[in-house]
Length: 152
Image 1 (tube, rainbow, N blue to C red):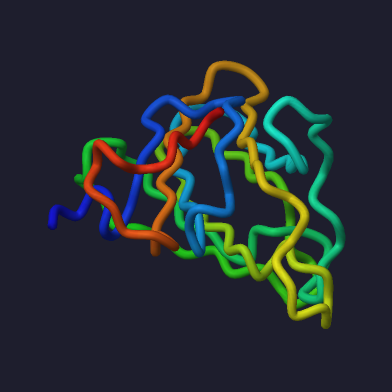
Image 2: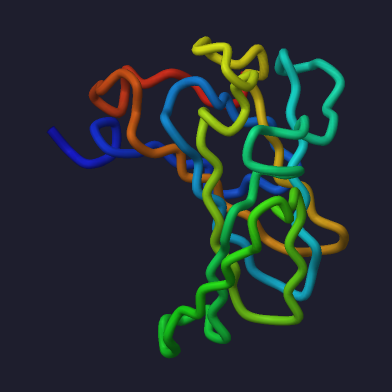
């Protein structure tokens, strides 16, 4: 089985696009451009998108992120780790690339032991930044032609 469908799926142009969050254990967003990238969530595809709720780990979903001054792979990644309790829902970069991941457990109600009611997540841009969404650690492994449609 190929990696697409077994390990990950992808939405190559995902700025402002609702992506089904419950098909994977996490979604990694790859963002480029001089912009601010902001996460919002909803219980349905066409529903109202809101800032993710405060979680057990703090006030946002982004725990740490990686930046790179090159979009062509010619520079090393630099990790930014946020202090406990200061997690965020938005990241701003001046140029290059930023990568951050969001995991389903971060959206689950604290101590509930159940899956979150939020099913869709968006990464919106403030101006003209580019975003790709990569759902990974898929809940159900399938051949690419039989995978769940992510934005419907």
